Length: 108
Image 1: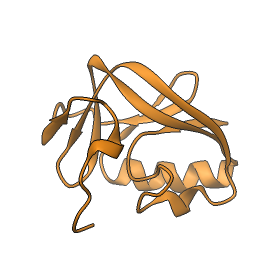
Image 2: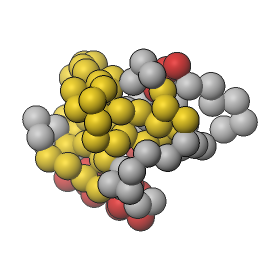
Image 3: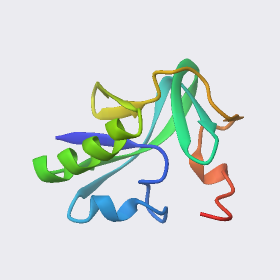
Image 4: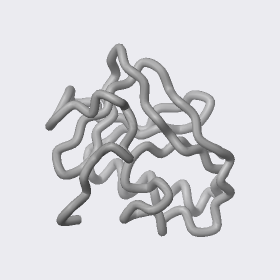
């Protein structure tokens, strides 16, 4: 199955190790989401766009990521790839570019 990640699971980010063994398919932009950051990234439905990395993952990898994300309050949304959105409205500061690479992770 395919997943789209936009924050701490992306390459070079703190939680990318969850994707060990996954196959990287490329980068893309998803319309209809805005990115916010308040210690963690939050994708919220809106008028913007969200930069993602797309991966082909095993059921085991999916279940590990899904458990982590849902325990933190995110909700999986199925489209061309699964994406975990924040269903509780905007939280933190809006990242205007929609690209998590533009967030300063100092202190992580």
